[in-house]
Length: 319
Image (tube, rainbow, N blue to C red; front, side, top):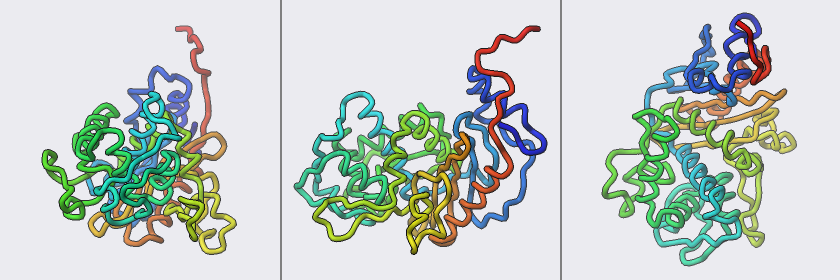
């Protein structure tokens, strides 16, 4: 990968020498441009190496809203990979899952649904009910699941500020009687944390993108209306008369978020010409703005950087 100008060698070497990857994950672009973003924080990352191409207040923690569900998705996929969860397993809807406010609200208390459909509800429609149901299925209680989220955050190298109190991203007050008793504070992440978490998903569990790229789908075939993906930038929206102005070439994920405290957030990912980028915006001022600001980030990345192998991986070099 090379900067179209200076700064080719470091990124290209990161592609060529995978053994150097840990040291390069915190690398920063030599030149920082002003993209004129109107957000609280932003990051642009190249997914294969973890190299940061752009950052703005990337290490300040903010509430991530439903971008929290990326960690829920990651842990669900870890269960699948380990063979402890199968897509035709039935996921039960408890009183707590049914009571989760906000997005979703398609699962009925006392009813069980196939895991693959619940994952669609989680990842496409940002279902809080789906997140709680998966948390209880995996860890017994959502509170135990949140502890697992925090343990995983450390394992993935997220910052000390990354902290989870639930599987949804809802605030403590919005959880009401189901708020955790043994975990303090509120959920928060930095923009860099969100990018690292997204990178863990797209590199370890890329099959998630087969779900997150779906523009709309019914949760139940008997439903009158489909679940419309909250991520309006998916490339599949290019033929949707209402959303095609947002559709972005190569974009197939990943997770939006909104609360009145977090404002509008979005972790996106797109691939072009063999290069995958991960973008994060936190605290955009409107639903439209989070996608327009994301477009600025991705355009900057695809217009100014390209993947280039200078020396093939595992090549022996002479002194």
